[in-house]
Length: 159
Image 1 (cartoon, helix red, strand yellow):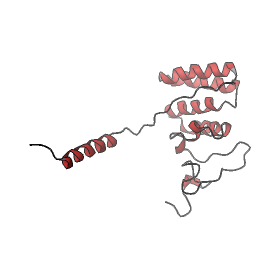
Image 2: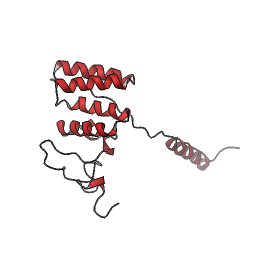
Image 3: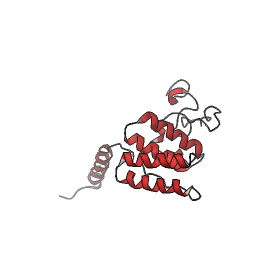
């Protein structure tokens, strides 16, 4: 007995729904390379950290990113990678600090600012300490990061 188009459509929708619901919800994050023009010693440490990160060797990656930061404090990619590593190690408070530093050292860096894993942390204080950055109406702050200076990221009146 041939299957109707309606039956086939329902079957396909069911498979898509089941596949979407079975997602682990983990955010896959990739460590960033040091940009051209970085201090060579810092870039080398970032590269070694990225190799350790890819292998799941969190403590080694952490040491390398910290080394890169000690050599070039303003290297946003090293702060971001260290934050990813600390997050994987369950050190959320320290991760938050480095996510914020990465964002402050790299205003407009698309990967850092749009990172799904970064969005769980609050507002970003601009370098120079001028308070929080203004929110974008309808987006809950900076494209989903925080709430334009409101604690917890909630807009006036809640959601």
